[in-house]
Length: 152
Image (cartoon, rainbow, N blue to C red; front, side):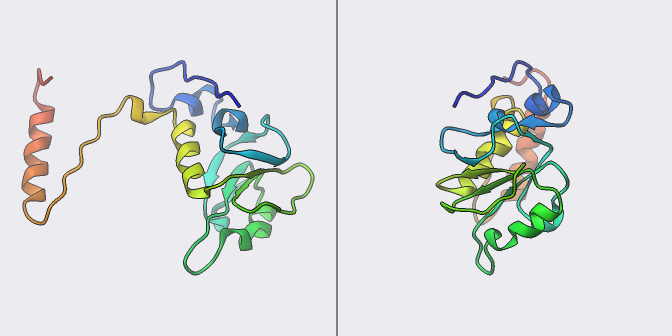
């Protein structure tokens, strides 16, 4: 499945092009298999907590330590989820809801979020600071250096 390239060099990217809604085709990578529905479904938000689903959401049924997101599919559907992304081979969905089967729901969430927000990693520079001691000092110094005019 091809994804539409982000034509704007903004952090909003894909989200901005569709005025707050993106088609599933723009979000889904090659790892997804349609169980039901189509890539033309419009997605207004990406959600992992069924209690936070709003009409038009894509709900990611993530496995957890205490509960499995697949146990909360009905609540997500009742709240208006239009897309369900799951690692299960079979999910029972009503008509009008698109289902995707993915090998790794967490990895799919990461990739969907990346595309939904217009691939911000292509325009942002990220610096990580790790260690036992001195992180605050190093991060403060790094910030001042990066805010300096004329830095490379």
